[in-house]
Image (cartoon, rainbow, N blue to C red; front, side):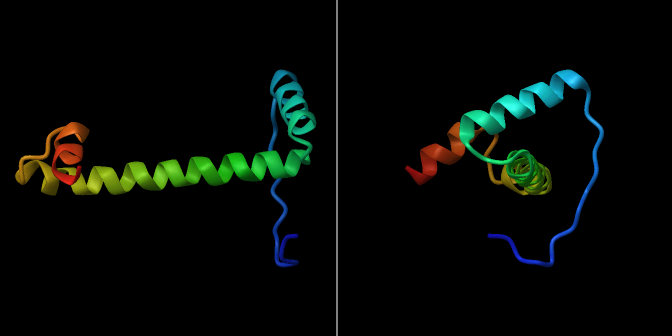
Amino acid sequence: MYDMKTRTVTIRIDAALARRLDRAARRSGRSRSAVVRDALERQLALDQLAELRRRIVPFAEARGYLTDEDVFRDIS
């Protein structure tokens, strides 16, 4: 399952979010921890992508790539 070198993180959530988390865990057959861990991993990946995108935009714009469609056009 998970490496024994895990850490415990405590968060506070309101009752409505706790109910949504419980429902999501039941529906998926996973623990609440697994649902939260997956959500956190996704959010951190999105944050990393946004940061990389922010850093690369000036270089892309300098080469005429102003939209996603410009990129897709050239790589398709």
